[in-house]
Length: 260
Ligand code: NAD
Image (cartoon, rainbow, N blue to C red; front, side, top):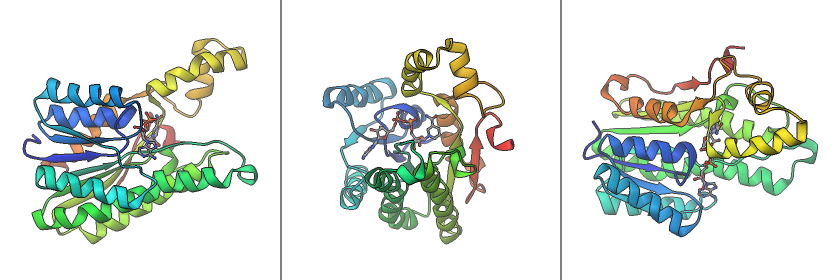
C-alpha cells in the first residue's frame, strides 16, 4: 500500500513513534526514524526494520528543540529517498506541576518539542509534498488536545496548539492532495507507562489492578489501555486512499475519554 513512499516519523526510537515506523515499513514505505537514546540500541532498531520488512530505514539524530536540525532532517530524507511523502510529528515529552510552580525551562522545552518542532518539520516538508501533489501529515496529539487535566499546563497547551496547527495547515493545502490530521490517543500502553506501575503501587499502597484502573485509567471509560498497534494502524489508515477526504480532523482514539 505504501511502496515507493517515504515516511519521516519524529520521536520514533520508542513507543508510539516506533510503532508507526514499523507499521509504515510493513506496508512497504521507506522510513526515517528519529529520537534520543543509546546509539547501539537505535542502530539495532533501525536494522530490525530493514530486516523485518525489506525496506530502507535511516536514522536522523535531529534534536526537536532545534529548528535548523529539523529542517536538515527533512532535507536529508529528500536527498536520500527523493522526497518525504508522509510526515508524522510524534516526538513529545511531559512534565507535571502546578502552573504557579511550573519550571520555565520545562515549559519552554514542552512547547518546543511537542508543538514548535511540528511547525518546523511541516514548513520544511510541505514544498516537496506540494510539488508531488500528494502528502500525509499526521500529528500525534493526545486526548489532551481536546480536554485538560490539572498540573499539565504546558502539555495541554502544546497539544491544543497542535490541534490548531493541524486545522490551519489542512485548510492551506486542502486542494493539493495533502491531508493533515491529528491523532489523539488516550492512555497508551507503552514501556514507559508499564515502568511506572511498581513505583505507583509502592507510593499509593495499591495493587497493580488498582493502579491501572483507579489511577491510570481513571478517565478512560473502557478501562483498557489503547495499544501502540491501534494508534499505528490509525496512522496507516490515514495514509490510505479511503482516508483522502479526512483532513483537518482532530481524531480521538481514547477508549471514550473525551466523551465525558
Ligand atoms: P516515548 O517517550 O516512548 O516516545 C517519545 C519519543 O520522542 C522518543 O523517541 C524520544 O527519544 C523522542 N524525543 C523526546 N525528546 C526529543 C528531542 N528533543 N528530540 C528528538 N526526539 C525526542 O513516548 P510515547 O508515549 O510513545 O509518546 C509519543 C507521542 O505520543 C508524544 O507526542 C506523546 O505526547 C503522545 N501521546 C502519548 C500517550 C501515552 O499514553 N503514551 C497518550 C497520548 C499522546
